[in-house]
Image (cartoon, rainbow, N blue to C red):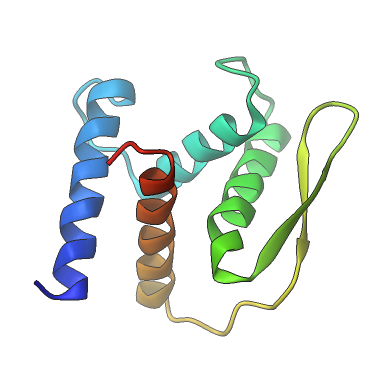
Length: 117
């Protein structure tokens, strides 16, 4: 099985699980999955977040997702419990499709580490 096919199958498995748990059967888009990962990483559970907090949650998720690839490293938790990351390396210029593949790879790796799949 090719690497691309395995990524596709693993990602579709994640989509199916998340659709059941969070999407009322509807498939979640990439941004929604990133947001859920941010909420998970913050660890405060299901609370109402302000618009700025939602953007910050997505940033946390992106940092956490790209950490295993060497782009970010965890630094500390602030007094409010929000994680902070340091950028280790700038992301190379990627086309939209390449960005999507990188994020899907990172999401699959994240959920494998979390033992969801």
